Length: 164
Image (tube, rainbow, N blue to C red):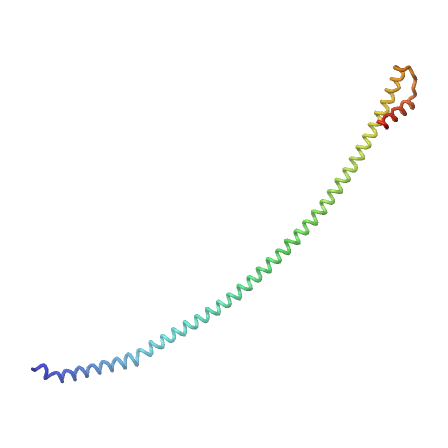
């Protein structure tokens, strides 16, 4: 068989080309391209690590800024509470002063009104006593036929009003 006799030549030729292709792959890809790819991967890994470190630093800075912000907010809230309490105290004190002033004014008006009422009552009572004394004189003269002086009639009316 002629095919088997050429087998040694074909195998050696294919082996030669196989070694040539494998050598080409080893030197071109393995020695030339793989280091470039590896350096690119390493550079990318370094850049990712640097970015992560920068992100961690930024997060820590943001956390510090947030803590400072919260502290300022708490201080502002406390200051607002103090001012509110002071304003309430001032309002209460002002209201108490106004109430005292109003109470004093009302008390003064009540005292004056009571004095005016007493004066009006006393004046009315004096008028009533005078009229009652005149009426008592007339009644005594018409009914009993007595002549009573104004002083006597006034004293009798006053005595009657004091007992009644």
